[in-house]
Each structure stands twice: as structure tokens, then as C-alpha cells.
Length: 132
View (cartoon, rainbow, N blue to C red):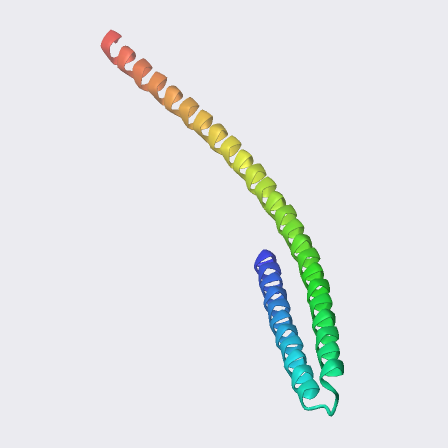
């Protein structure tokens, strides 16, 4: 049950992060559109306006590259965490499987011993009836 809660927490965190990323993307997109519209309606000469648009485009590009770098870092962190968790799960399953195999081997040995003892008893009982 505790593992299920951890899975739900991880899934919830992933959904919150995804939602945050989507919101951030729309925020940046809206800001860019707003900036372009503001520049187009600003009372400036053509040369200044073109320079402002170019500066805004460069700033937008730089901000996008920075955001992409942050997303890349977060993705690498999530990948490493998922990989580590996968290794832990695999180790746990492997250990439990080994223990289960040992229990079954012990049970089979016990059952084999019981069957062998019963077979001897039947054999001895048959010998005693045929001899006596």
C-alpha cells in the first residue's frame, strides 16, 4: 500500500510539472505576442521599430534556449531518478524471487521426503503381509 502511495505521489508530481510546463509555455507565447503587438502600435520610426523587434526576438530566443536547458536538466534528473527507482524495484523483485524459489525448493524436498517415507512404509507393510 505504501508503494502505491509513492507511485501516486510521483504521478501527481509529474502531472503538476507537466501542467506547470504547459502554463509556462503559454505564458511565454502570450508575452511574445503581446510584445510584438505593442511594438507594432508604438509611435516609433521604422528603423527603431525594426531594431526593437529584432531585440525582442533575440531576447525571446535566449529565454527559450534557457528554458530548454532547464527542461533538459529536469528531464535528466527525472530520468536518473526513474532509473534508480527501477533498479531498486528490480533488486527487490529479484531478492523476493530468490527467497520464494528457496522456499519452494525446501517444500519440494520435504514433500519428497514424506513421499519416500510413505513409500517405505507401504513397501514394508506389503513385505510383512507377504512374508507373514
